[in-house]
Image 1 (spheres, one colour):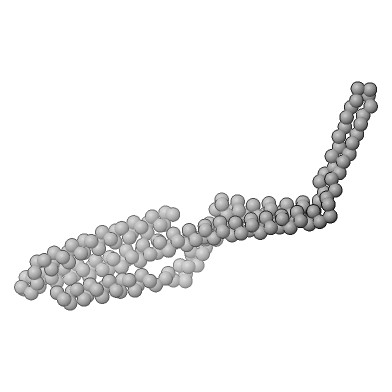
Image 2 (image 1 turned 90 degrees about the horizontal axis):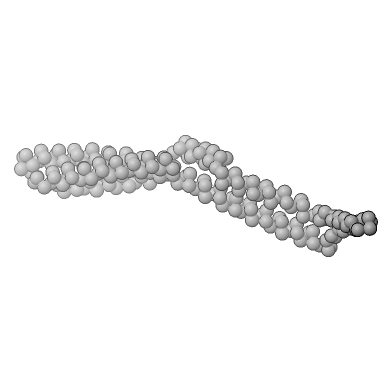
Length: 195
């Protein structure tokens, strides 16, 4: 029975070592394609890009003067008073306004980059969770098969008087636990795919 315990420990170690291997580069290219596709079509990413363009367009308007104001007053004697006024900015005011607007463009770019980074991260995270769930399920299914073989071996050993019924029962229950864990891992992979 001691050799069965060592074999189970070896299987667990192999399962952990195999799960730490990242997806293949082809899979990474597929995920990056998904990221590009989502960034092009996601409403928040598009809105953030339009916000940057809106701020950028306003930079050109900071150097212009305010439009003139015209006021017409009709008096009771038939005369018309016309007044035209123009606000002339103090020297350096338009430059300061442009500087402020350029800072707003920088802030909008930072906000846009943050939104795009968060969207890309959520896509990569969902892809990683799907891959990890699939790998975990695959390894657990392999482990389940080996534990079932060990349980059958324990039953044969029990028939020969070399093992107890508890050994076989423990291995069968462990195989059922692994089967449940594999089903959960497959469900996790499916839910990650749905994200």
